[in-house]
Amino acid sequence: MKSNARIAPLRSSLQLALVGMAVAVLAGCTSHAEKHEVTPAAVIPVRETILAATPEGRRVEAVGSLRAARTATLSARIMGSVLELRKEAGDPIRRGEVLVVIDPREVSGQIAQAEGALAQARAALTLAETNFSRFDGLFTRGSASQLELDSARYQRDTAAGAVKQAEGAVETARSYRAYSEVAAPFDGRVVDRKCEVGDLATPGRPLLEVEDAREIRLYVALAEDELALATVGGTVAVTVPALGDREFEGRVAEIVPSLDPATRTFLVKLDLPSDAALRAGLFARARFLGGSAEVVRLPRNAMVRRGSLTGAFTIEDGKAAFRLLVLDDQPGSEPRIVSGLDAGARVILDPPATLENGSPVEVRS
Image (tube, rainbow, N blue to C red):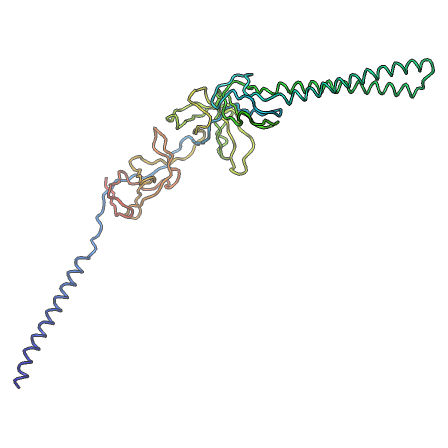
């Protein structure tokens, strides 16, 4: 009996302890749940504008590279070693100035051969004329037949033709001597040198590239539906980014009538004014204007830049939505939206720094 009396208090103490632990666990769970309750995001007040399309003069920008209006590749017309190169890339040249000298010894040998053949032809002609005179006299006295006289006449005429042919060969060979000196075809400058002293020049091998840098042209491509904006003689605004976006007045000089089947574009050539800053190879933009088109422009205080990306926040179902945009941004006007948003879109002005994609917003005046 004493033993049971001792056990009863122990059981009671154990039960009380278990109850206390359960209460503590429940309290801890309740506290943990309270800490993880999601607080609703705060509504951000914003201002908005609704994009509208307005009719504006149609403008198309075409890009291309500047080129010299006149270029030429100077090639060898005879075979021989290059003896002299009198100009380097970038050097100015004058029309008729000798730029390359080729060893003329091979040409001299060809001239000597042609002159020797001419001497032989003249000697054969002298003999043929003597024979013809002899047979003509014999025929008159009845000592030679008609066939013998005709044969002598044929030999004389053949020899005379051989002399003319040899004289032409001599003249041709002598003309090649002038080809040993390659001269500039016009005033300009050397663009590239394609040979060195000692190289073997062969007929058709390029030696120098030259250009007339006084006249510069811009070559651009226009799509099929844009070609109507270009008219021969019309003026076009041209900018060169490398020159600080300086603007030049270009004149449409030529429109190539054939369509490039790969790009579906037409080539347009623009003459630019004479300016020392304009050099062949520079990148340039040409703006063609004409007609009318509906244009949607974005206020500058709605533009948002995220690294290299540009966009704007719109309001959709009471939340902010970030939209990437392609803009045509020219100085002096608000950027034109090329793609990304259309007229009627609700755009947020001066978006707060805390605004994120999906943030709840409220429009306030």
